[in-house]
Length: 155
Image (tube, rainbow, N blue to C red):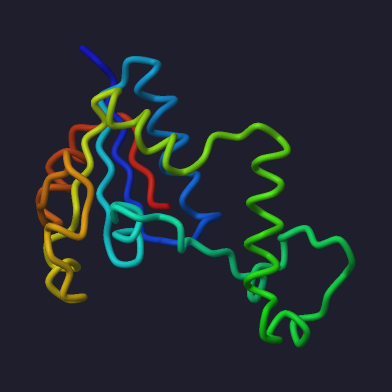
């Protein structure tokens, strides 16, 4: 019987998009049955267009910056754009797969994507806002799979 991995993706920023997709793709490659439950801001990772994913340096003290930067400076206009540009450049320089490529790899590896129906309704999303190949369900959908899983993670 295959091991199971249940993930909750609750963040929708560029830096928080990597963990669920990397863990899911890796687990699927190791023959785990994998399901990701996308809720709240994590739902943005299922949208057709991911080009507006950003990184915020504010409140992220572990983010490496070229020079030490106090929180006050991180609040200045343009700092989010600069941090996003730096992250995208670092990803490209290191040959790390894009979020789009990781998401596609997950889908091709039969990772099941579940969009939280309550959050879809809460934020007035429409099913047409999202990529093909996803399912819609609630907390009970996640809990049923997670209750049978070997590993369950909240990201």
